[in-house]
Length: 121
Image (tube, rainbow, N blue to C red; front, side):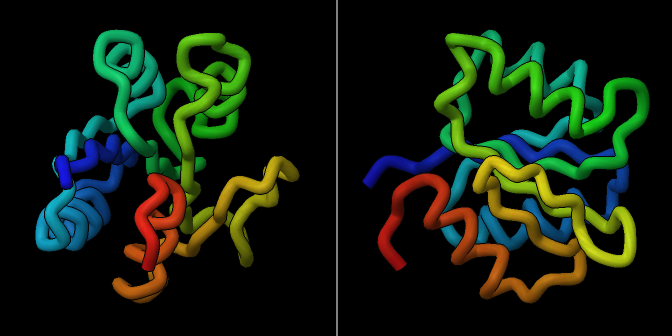
C-alpha cells in the first residue's frame, strides 16, 4: 500500500509534533504547516490525502480555510478532520466533518484519520 499524505495545520508546534509522530509511526507521510494560507498554498500544488487542522490559526482561521477548501473544485473532495482545543467542546461544522479534541487519544486520532483516507480499521 502506498503511503498516504496527511497535511497538518496548527500553529502550536508541540501539537504538530505529537500528531506528526503518531502518523509517521503508522506509515503516513506528513507535511506540517502553521497557517491556513500555507495550507491552501500547499494544497494547490500537492494534493494531500487528508487535512487535519486546528480552528484557531493565525491570520486565516481554520473555519475560513475549510470554507475555501470546500468552495474550490480542485480541493473540495479532500477529506478534512478538525483537531482543536477551541471552546469547552469543539466547533460543529455541520458538514459531517470529524471533530476531535486536541487531547484525544492516539487510537481515536488514528482511527479518525484512517477512516477519512479510506483505510479500513
